[in-house]
Image (cartoon, rainbow, N blue to C red; front, side, top):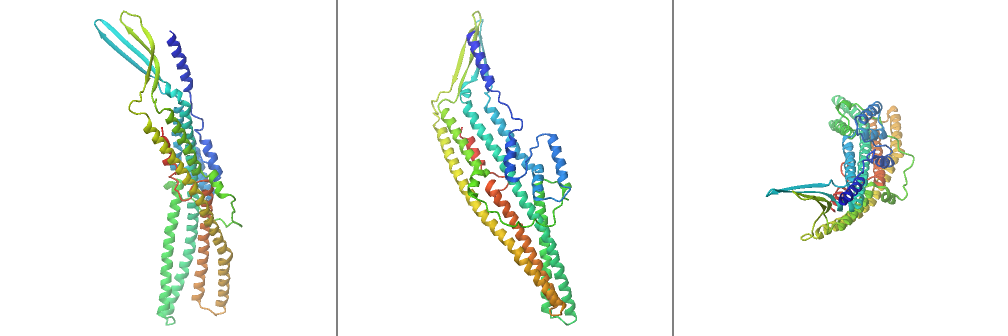
Length: 468
């Protein structure tokens, strides 16, 4: 009975070794922390009907009042179904991690031979001993993949937040511009109508009238383009917010937030990107995971299958025989060199990808800060110089018109130019807030030019998976 006792003891050890369990929050707490540090908002993963219902109630509350940039991001975190789908990758990664901490199920074999009045029965049960020996290393590999999945989930959330902020500022600006384009069109229409009447009375040349009419036609086309742009920007925001056809009446403020008093002067922006930017952290973690996978490949290069188990044989008329059985893969044709070569090439691929991601991150930070400073200076120039100057010119022209020193056409033309300077300021202010979003994203989140649906580590993660 000694083999049975030994087998029972081994089975108990294997059972205890395979008791890895799923964490209560699925590892999402880390994702929430990473996301909040970079966006100021807390992401939510709705895994039950109760959580989905709670999110719906909060969505309805947010839609009751005009959206701000922050509330738009909160709404996207609650309601963007694509983001919720990406969070499910975290559950998949955790299930792989749990499986890595458990042994494969044992295999049972049974054989029966009969002849000449005798019956021979063979029975055996085999356990994956190699899996037990390499379990710590395999668990480390899957742990790093799980941590990579957490970074990927935060990466997607930060991307959705950045896209939502950009879409929000674009939608508010487009809505505001339509109002000014409509004013330009009304002024052009009044000028064109007055020119037509004066031409009919013989007090205006045909050429001057056609010029006024052409400007009115251009203003009408500009308004139509502006209205379509406003629809496009609003629909873009709608998609990111995950709103259905029954939720399209959400409100936006009438104008963009005011320009800050001073521009941000980030210190050590490039180093901040190296320390906190998610795609950089993902690339480093991916390289580390590939290195661990390479170690596992080296360990199992020559012996990839090793099973040990209890076996017995029964023969008619004879006592039962007990023993053990070992199953070992013999490296006669494949010495594991190809797998090792593949793993080493995959590792060097990951190293070079990480270096390129770091170079791109530093460059994007410099570029984003240059765009940010330019946008701030330009918006400040419009606010402090162009718009006040146009206002003073308009006031002076009104005085001159009241003194009958200029015509009504000159007054209307000045009005159009003043509105033009205001629209220029609105566009510059929009560009500033977009540049501010891009700068913050480039320093701590991801590439400001990457879409929220894609991640730079997809290829590296796949490579890590193939390094076994």
